[in-house]
Image (cartoon, rainbow, N blue to C red; front, side, top):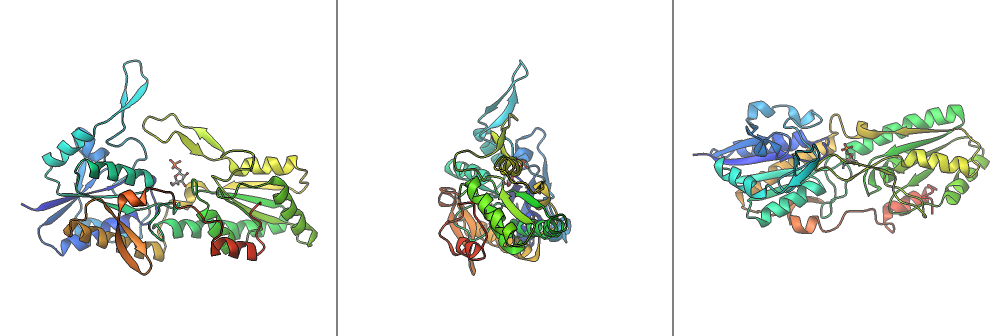
Length: 365
Ligand code: F6P
C-alpha cells in the first residue's frame, strides 16, 4: 500500500501556495510509493462529514505554480482545536476536536501532514505535533511576520503590488497637488509598508513598530510642501498607531475566527491630519486584498518551489515538528515551536530602517 501525505493550506491565501503544492507533488512523484492528498479548505476537508480530500497528481498540479490563491482552498476560521458549533439558541461556540482529527488521520491511513500556513496555522501544527501527529510546517504569509525564516513566500509579490500602487498614487498626487495616503496590509508588522515606501519613494511611512506623532508627520508634510513640491505620498501599515492610541480595528464575531480585523488606519490618519490643520487636499486608498490575490512573482515562485521540495524531503527524513525556512542561501528545517515563539517584526535599528531615514522618509517619530 502506498504511503500517504496530506497537504493543507490554512489561513489567509497568499501568492505562491500553488507553487508549493506543485513542488511537493513533483518531488513526491520521484518516489514511487507515495500518494499526495489535499484537504479542502485547510483541515476542514478532513474534519467534515463526508470528508473532502482530493488526490493531487502530477497532472492535476501541472502549470499551477503561476496561479494565485490555492487550488485546495483555505479558511482562517476554526481548525481541530476550535471547531465552530451552533448552539440550540442560534449562537456559536467552539469545541476541541483534536482527538477526532487524530482518529480521522488513522482512518485515512495518513503517514504525514504538510501544513502550509502562517503564524496561526503553525500554532495548530505545533499543537498537533505535541499530540503525536507526523507534521511538517511550510511558512506562508504576505505579512512576512514569521520568525526563523528570512522571508515567507508571498511577501515579495505583496510588496510589488504595494509598490505599483505607490507609483500610481505619486502621479495623481503630483497632478492634483494632494496628499495621498495608501493603507497596506501586514498585521502587526510594517514590512510591506516599509519596503513599498522605499521602492516607491514615499515621503512618510508609518509602521506598527514605531508609533507615530501626528505633529512629526505634519512637520514632514510641511517640509515637503515648503521645498516647493506641492504633494506628498504616505504609506501606512494597517497596524500603525499614534503614540497615544491603539491599532484601528473592528471586532470580528465570526465563530472560530480572529477576534479583531485590522483596518481604518489610513482614514484615521487623514482625519488626524485635518484636525492638525493640514490645508492640502487628502485622499485615502486601501489596497486590501489586491496585495494578496493574483500571480506570484518570480522570487515567490522560486521560494515556494524550494519550500515544497524541501517539505517533502523532510517527510522522507521524518523531521516531524519542523518547519521549512529560508536562511539565505539555504533552505533549512527549524523547530516549529521556535518559529512561533515571537513575531518577526521590523527591527527599528536595522539597516532597512536606517535606509528609509537616509532617504528622508519620515517614520513619524
Ligand atoms: O495575514 C494576512 C492578512 O492579509 C493580513 O495582512 C490582514 O490583516 C489579514 O490577513 C486580513 O484577513 P481577511 O482576509 O480575513 O480579512
